[in-house]
Image 1 (cartoon, rainbow, N blue to C red):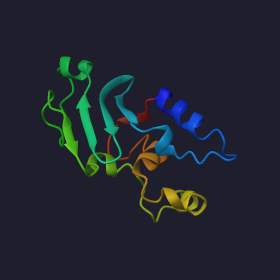
Image 2 (image 1 turned 30 degrees about the vertical axis):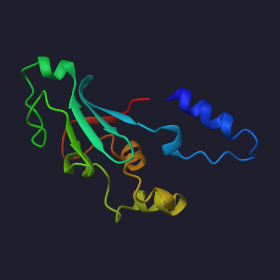
Image 3 (image 1 turned 135 degrees about the vertical axis):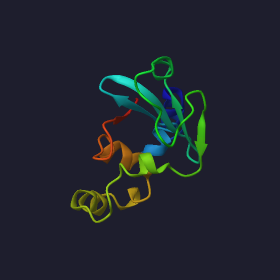
Length: 134
C-alpha cells in the first residue's frame, strides 16, 4: 500500500494540490473485529467486494461461537454488499452525529469504509470492536 501511495504522489508531483481521496491512499482497507483484545476476524473491501475471514486465534479456540452470519470458521465469506452485522454499526442518517459529519463531508454519504472507520468501532448490538488495521 505504501508503494502505491508513493507511486501516486510521484505521478502527481507537478500538481499544486494533490487530490488524494481515502480510497486512493487506502485501496484495500482491512478492519479487525475484536472481542476484548483478541482478534475474531478481518473485514476487507477491495473497492467492489467485501470479504470476511476468521483469525487463526478464533479458529483455534472453542469458547466463543461463530457469528450468526458467518457460521463456518474456515470459510472466506465474500459479498458485493456489506453484511447486516457490519452495516448495523453505521448510524442511521437520522442520527445527529452522522448528519453533522455528512454536512461537512457530503462525498462520504455512501462511503461505507469511511463510515465504519468513524462510527463503527462499537455497537449496541454486540460486544465486538471494529478497528481499521493500518
